[in-house]
Image (tube, rainbow, N blue to C red):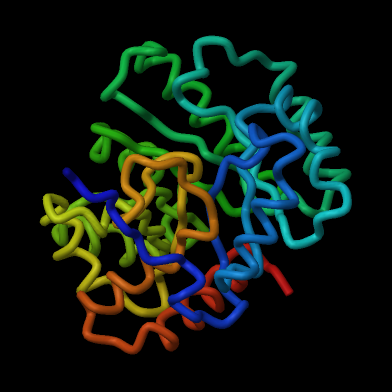
Length: 271
């Protein structure tokens, strides 16, 4: 008879409640959001960045967070949805950023050539337009890039984003990509896939990310870390990612946890 796998509880990591999950999709959790955040706090996560995938999602779901000040917001049109984006979306985004100080960055925006949900040329058009919006509003950007790294860098350089505040969401590349990104002054956000044994390139890369440019994310409900791989991810599981990164870097996990939180607060302008 097979035994049910016993997983350590995230509370058992005993991390202090100052962590920041820089990237989660909680608006799909509806009335369960307060419970999700309570579990996060019990596991050391004090602040969560919720990503609204487009102005319609923001308008429909923003009220879910009205009495949850521990959540800040990121708003942008994902490259998968670029084929549906319109000028009206840009207008709505600009109005939202002008009236809601919990909106801290434009994202996740970028290019995704792994899937074929939007033609590459249309992705590029709306990527550039959203970068222009961020420049006009003097806001950071959160980048989604998959199988389009060289093209994405070309666009960012062409639009003068070197030296501007940029967070590379869900960084899963090898060590050869660390220097090109951090040399431009950008931050790298590492998800739970760093805990997967086959993520050899990423596991090598995290050892050479400068300490002051590293932040953590769940990308919840996706990419749950070991030992919860395959389960629904949520901010409460962020500590497992921190523990593995600290082990790979040979650092104390409490120091890494605190420093990554400080980096995230600095990047997003959080108190």
